[in-house]
Length: 279
Image (cartoon, rainbow, N blue to C red; front, top):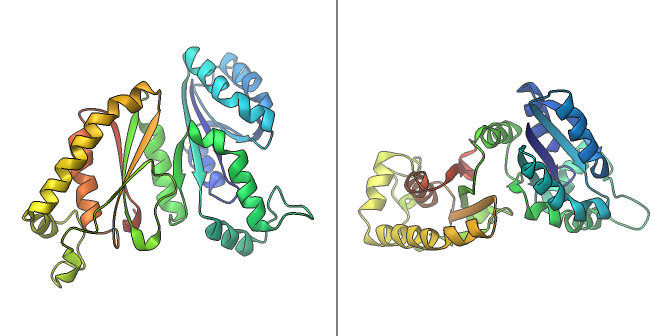
């Protein structure tokens, strides 16, 4: 069975992700109590379902503690298990709850909405540690749908390496494991001919590759990742997110993430994302 477990903060887009999987032919279960996960997968395996997506209700601290072991057991039994954790910045979640007028699942007479969000983040920290994390703060629903499709389409073996470009003026991605700052490099945005282009365009690539500092930074980042990737793999990490940022997230960071992804595709499973390009 290919099993996709979806978790994350309330309001982060879990319903969008689950709908994508339903439309793609997955048998889906929404808001399943975590303590029933093993029995449910056993039943669905016996029923012959090859692809299953489960949105798990993980606000049970005892079940949270057992989830990493449960996932390991599933994999030992031959299942292709992928855990997707969606999150967003607190101000984004507050805005979403305000727009939809929904109550937060942890709401009571004692906690404010920001306090509910932070409490949920703390409760789910153990799940985030074993999952592929996606920060949906600046993502449109359509972009999130595309990213989910890309995530489930990868062959599953070993560590998945995600390169993500971003703009510092919009904030560092929450899901980043390693962050590189490229704002010290010459900025194509100051050239009127290049302002409306991106790091994927030939003129911007030519501009950046003509700069010795760009070539040196690219080589330094490649060497750093090459040196440490085996250690992350030995640590049984399933996903490693390398975020590369510049000021606006459209020129320097895009060029470097494209170059890094192209280099490492021969060494690991690679995902490539450009947050500010709104793909």
